[in-house]
View (cartoon, rainbow, N blue to C red):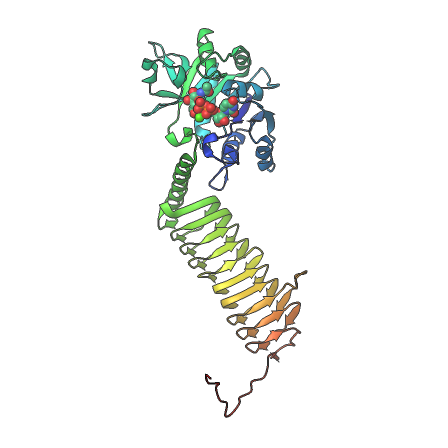
Length: 455
Ligand code: UD1
Ligand code: CA
């Protein structure tokens, strides 16, 4: 059966108190809306429609990179969910079925939706319902004595008796297109809120004698909508917890599943240990036997086998081979390539640089725009002066170079293989192979020197 999907995302999200449209608030590092759209796209629907209103341009702009074609439809005034779906149903073919989802209900699972779509082989409309302890504010599912659904009543329109019903409408509904188009055309706003209620189509279906099915969510988190930032924080914690548990069950030592945040995707090899307060962003690969210390941020990087990232390090856009140690307090910036067995120590920053196999930059250094060979030793306080205020210049360091502490290397410059640089040098010219480069004032000792005294 052909399936179309309409995602409602027109609301402002008043209770977010934000200038960002609600559906763009991030959950696990990406917009709420993109979670729903990914799930929707997994069905390869005939059309994937998004109804936007508040901040329409901003919402569209945030999803320009979305992998599947999106059909954007505008609802200029928020006149109710039925009105929103009517906008979304523009030029909808009258065969097939349409699934209605919400930009602010991010964790609905493909499995749940699949089971709802399955009943559409016989049903005209199917509603995803849930039994809750606190139904306040939600639409109630009305059933007759035989348990058949006869309608949905909104909180504000419900009688006392109806308000006691605990079976609620999650909002997720699937309907045959030919019925949906008919029902939408018959909606009115004659109710307590003066809105066009999508939910009224259920009563119409019952009166038309059409088959109405219900599906249920197994996991309450799936149907959880987000109306304020507290709910957003709660759903973020639940999602993070789940991701951490999945990693742990998959063989990663997660020292505290409550203190790991994955805002993207991580792949871990065997016997990886993740200490507390690690944040993972973008796509991160961590190889076998790696140990990631506490308070570490890893963003879009690949870490090979047997590496250690010590506490409070920030690693972004880096490619690390194997058996490398980074940190504590290191900042590895984009374009860094660390070769096998290299070591980056505390308070070291690297950017767009290759650090060769076995080379060590142990303390307090900045290495930028540099290509460094193997077995180099960089002393504390070494700085590559790569920027002249207008252009970036490159530094080349050969194999086996030894750079004394507190050296400034003014690029462009090349230190050939086997070079030694005396501590405290400011290197402005190339140093030929195996030579010593010294570039500092010569020491004088003054005999008989008297310290100034007061008065
Ligand atoms: C709706 C349902 C209710 C259900 C509840 C679940 C209706 C009439 N009621 O109520 O039965 O229990 O969801 O959360 O459908 N939206 C638009 N345009 C509009 C109105 C809404 O895009 O004109 C979007 C909102 O941005 C939101 C979603 O639709 O994402 C739901 O709208 P909302 O006003 O929150 O509906 P509820 O009153 O909560
Ligand atoms: Ca709502």
